[in-house]
Length: 309
Image (cartoon, rainbow, N blue to C red; front, side, top):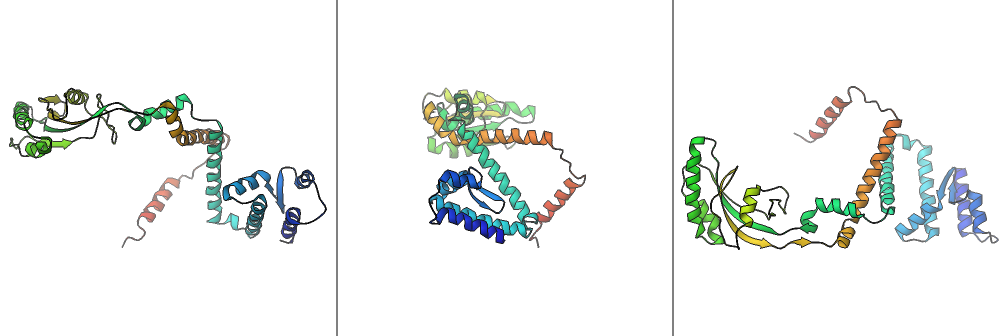
C-alpha cells in the first residue's frame, strides 16, 4: 500500500505541484510514453483520461484524480483477493463483456455511415415504417369452410345470403348485422375488422400475411363503403367491406440512412463479436461437464420455485 500511495503522490506532483517547469514529453516518457499516470504496476493511458473527461464533462486533471482513486481502490481489492471471489469475479467477467461490446460498436461506427446495401436490407425488414405501399383496412364476415364435405354447399349458400344481408348495412352496422345473421348451427360464422394490408396481403401493422386471393378482392373494391360478393379462399367464404384506403409511406434514402445508423452499428458490432468469438473458440478447447445440462435444469427449477408457498 505504501508503494501505491507513493506512486499516487508522484502523480499529484506531476499534475498539481509547482516544481520547475518540465516538458510534457519528458513527463510522459518517464511514465512510459502515452501514459497519464501510474499506480503501482498499473498504468492509466492518456486515451482513458480523455474518454473519462469527455464522458463526465470534467477537466483532464479531474479525470486523472478520479481514475487514480478508482485504481487505488481496485488495487486494495486485488490485494485482499476480492477479484477472485464470487460474486465479484463474475461481475468482472460481465463488465469485460460489456466493454468488449462497446469496443465492437465503436469499431462498427468507425467504418462509416450505413452503406446502400445495409440500408436496403433494413428497409426490407422495416418496410412498414419506411417503405410502405398503399394499404387498405377492411371488415369481413366469413362462413368457415366446414370439415364435413356434405356441409360445403350449405356454407356457400349461407354466405350468399349473408352477402345480401350486409350489403345494405352501413360501415358502423356491418359487424352487428353480420353477427345477427341466422344460420345453420353446424356452420361457423366469424366477423373481424382487420389491420391494414397491401395488395399482396402483407400486414403493415403487426406482421403476418393475408390470403392473397382475399387481399386482391379487397383492393378491387372501388371505394370505402363498397362490399364484395362472396370471396372463396382456403379458409371459407368471405364477404368483405372496404373501410379505408391508406396512401403509401416512403422515406427518402438519405433519411433512412440516418434512421438506421444505430441499428447498423449494432449489427456490425454483432458480426465483429461473432467473428472474434468464432476465432477464439477455434483456438481454445471448451469442455462442458457431462452433468452440466442437468445441473442448469435443476438450478432453473430452483429459481422458478423461489417464493412458492
